[in-house]
Length: 300
Image (cartoon, rainbow, N blue to C red):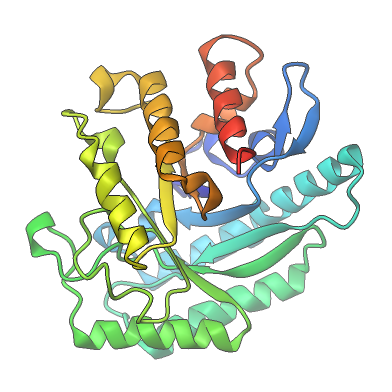
């Protein structure tokens, strides 16, 4: 579950890692509000303002790290998992966690990135959340390589070296590096070579007003060629495809994913607050959508 936050601009609690928000993501919650089983098995902490086009500064990076640790975001997730473990009777369970590698624009170099990783590691070890397991880091600073046509950062050989060195440093901690590139990402065949362990690709179907199903076929080709390990499921309430019908969008992602057998692979999920809202509903289209997502997760 790739959990976007908008820190510090959004005060809406639906976009914070509060216990009521994350419980329907960590566990499947039935219509009576009771947890019945585990849902998403890992959680990615990320802010949209860590993407390079948002011009992240080191001051913002420091503030965001403080926000997720001192601000209670990681602790809230830990407490939510702890409560659900008791209810579900699974005392040994730990939810996996990835944390974004924070990169400040103008400091895209190994030394500064390592300092930020070390700062996160220290905060994690100091907090020592009993119900969470740190699996690795998420590279969300750039989502592709060398793509002038789509007005995204041009990554040259120097920056490739930085990404590779970051992967090596993360690996030296016994952790893994995850990336979720655009379907059209240039250099998509390079991510594994550069040391990225897990690559899931965005079909970007939800943002296509034409509803081109060939987007799924292209993602499947990347997977078959070994460039990617699975897809990202993009299931928000606001979509451009499907005549802006979000229910149809979810059904299309599910149908295409089942067709290609992606339910047996690594799947990442885009999330603002939408799936949590579905899980907190007891009837109607929200509840039906939540049920469909859960059935896909457990279908492998």
